[in-house]
Image 1 (cartoon, rainbow, N blue to C red):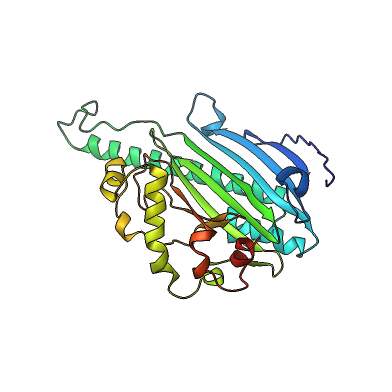
Image 2: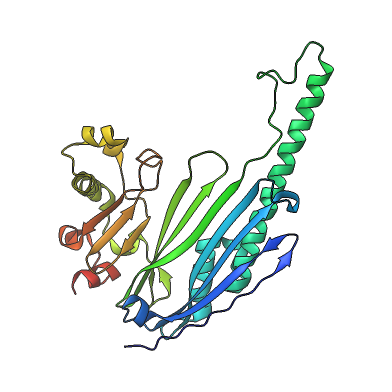
Length: 302
């Protein structure tokens, strides 16, 4: 077993009514993820609630970030590996920053955008009220002309998880949830697979033979039906799916020792009220489609 230790750090920063809570946990891959890859991970967690004008009676934005990132590796340059995680979780503009700095910068940008949205809304309300005051006979309290003098609260959570970390393959998933007022939130999942031998992201073109997309289509439908415990596409549509007959591999996949997992985010082929379907296809049914000596074919041969 690899070594395991934890470092906890609490940092409170006060700036324009911001309260940051940052905790860091250092974890070695083997003990945490049962991994054979010698990759050590750190975790940075941050929670921020920011009220407009610093008044707790006002609407606010709330953001929670938990970033698991590679700290060291004996297979690939840790800076390159770390940059890949940062770029795909936070975006290219942040990939030159250190992990703790990128979490704070992303949060700061989120708060700034919320403040701008609130200001824009307030200016729009003022303009509408001015226009209404210039028109005789308009009752500002009438529902047709009344404008709400408040702004919505925003919420966001952003996190990643290590899904597979064995046999030279590192797969992780980024989950992001947003709410900009209203009852519904939008959740999205982004999947990434890395070949630690080459240091490159694994794509569908790296693991499948030509023509894989058409061949996979029928299998995706079959396993989606099985996982939803229904008999046909019509029953899937009754559950809230749509366009299933045209479903195709979407490059949003994970690999493990058993097979490939495709994630279809809400709105792709299913209503927003449903959980994002994750379709698991075992290697045994796609073995003939796998490119020889690819990462997936090696996993399938274990």
